[in-house]
Length: 380
Ligand SMILES: Nc1ncnc2c1ncn2[C@@H]1O[C@H](COP(=O)(O)OP(=O)(O)OP(=O)(O)O)[C@@H](O)[C@H]1O
Ligand SMILES: [Mg+2]
Image (cartoon, rainbow, N blue to C red):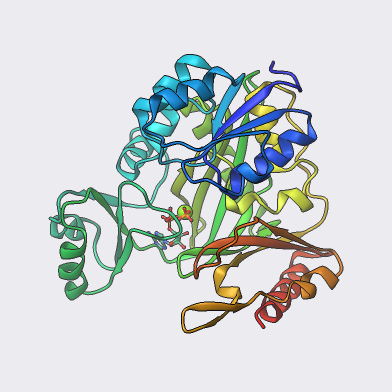
């Protein structure tokens, strides 16, 4: 066990690192953030911050040498430097977990090899996508194997003309082509596994995306109990087989005939778990702290039905490519059973995650209705 008072290192300085640091502080830990860009959301709340490249092995070794345990909030960390970190401090989740999850080809191959239900896919190399498209059929979606997030590096293909366009766009890049899933809804299961061997799954979130970016998470999800239990079991099973210590988020499609298909994995706190700060007995960030430090895991009961709404840079008022007015924060601040979380990012950009808010109510339907109404009033 790594007791309170020790230092936790975090690779990555975004909002996930920021909320992780805030939770670690609540339990009396010190936090050291390693992030290439100066002035990051996490560095602003950390005890120590190092600003250096992920390729700078000397800086990483200095960082790791001063930490009692290291975790990450960002998946695209090169594996060589990560090995240097792991030699100097326990790294949770381990380097082999990140190696699988940071690349869609490896992740899907792992799901296939382990008999985990997943969306049908085929690999495509170097722009030669026609055979992969033929294998899965149209419509489908092409995704780069590396460095994708918030729908970046993806293109939906509906016609042969799209296939030709995608072949040009994705030339020279390793990709996967996935069958398009006409899902009933999207779900995520976040599970914690502690270094002491305990496992606990959060209640399932129902996720609604707009333009491939998460818009709303609803907890409890509006699905049959059996589907929720099955999703939690799959997530716990995947975490155990991968040997995860820390959090693992599993994104699922729930099909019209009730089948659960894994979309992707993330071995870290997840956007769809932000509801837990206000709506759950233990937040996902505190649970991650507990798991990587070997503390007993916290309870995961839902305090009240909760909806989380992402606040993107689009909520600012824009004129000629410039943000001219901030969103109407007072709308959220004045609402009952609502909470505003801002990440301290100074520069809004369309599509950039700037914060989120949550709305709690007696039923998930009531919370969702109020959340949508507040979201509509946020833009001036
Ligand atoms: N095969 C598919 N069928 C239907 N919808 C899809 C498919 N793949 C992706 N999408 C839609 O696009 C969203 C983003 O896709 P995905 O999770 O693969 O991307 P990402 O860039 O890793 O996003 P994030 O990091 O935000 O999870 C999905 O949540 C889903 O709404
Ligand atoms: Mg996703």
